[in-house]
Image (cartoon, rainbow, N blue to C red; front, side, top):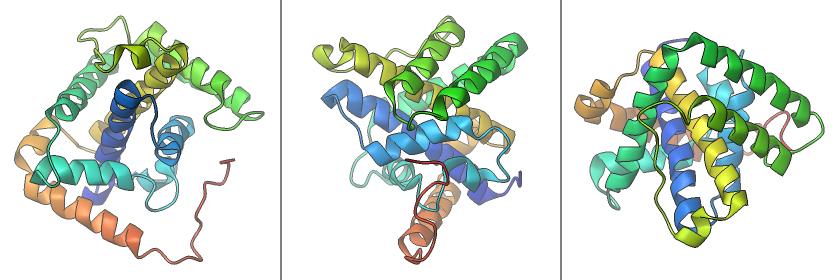
Length: 221
């Protein structure tokens, strides 16, 4: 894949989008379906031609791009909890990168989920449960653990627990892509203006996408 600035910001937006979905489920019990579909879709894209193809049509990570812009500019407002989650995801992915056996297990688990995907839509409970189990078996034991905070009745709901774990796995996937494309936590700290420019560019391109463009993923239901 090309290691260009737009690709890096797209992957970073993928992290923000998955984490934002996690926070919304933890706080309110629900998240935007299209945003969640993009996150889960990305888990299946092992041999994507480029970064954009990992997430689907242009605009697929618009929500994540908006979250990134808000964190960099404070408009409409910064959410420090979101920043902490993103930092935790990036740290956890670095721990994972040093565990080849776990990477192999995740690869095998994704292949099994792909078989389920042949019969079920992206957000089907069985598909999400497979990814949630995969997260629990491979990533939960690693330190630092990602502790999700929210409203107790939402966090105690088994369906929400499954969705949160599956989305955290998607966040890790985007963090891995971000690092493979040359991204680092130092860029998040010191390249604010550059990241902001690329995030705005992505949002502008998405807003001007022609209606004749493909508006759905090839295998989305």
